Length: 91
Image (cartoon, rainbow, N blue to C red; front, side, top):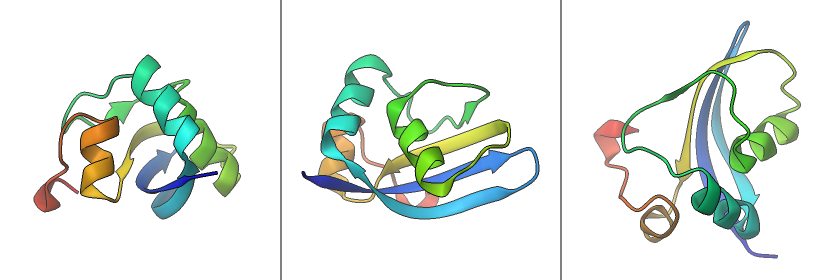
């Protein structure tokens, strides 16, 4: 199984989680097909995006999520799965 290193920031009702974790390539493919991401706009509220679900499952986050953002660490993966490159000042 190929893994995509993914940076994330998840703001819960009680705590903020920031870091990086490995997400299966198949999860990223499903996400990019079903949940296209708008460049440079953090997401608010509840979402069924499989990448977010994988991250919250890995971190065992059970609290309500208020805001989140995630993207592949590698620039080539960003272009492939997001359709744009995340600039350092946007991170």
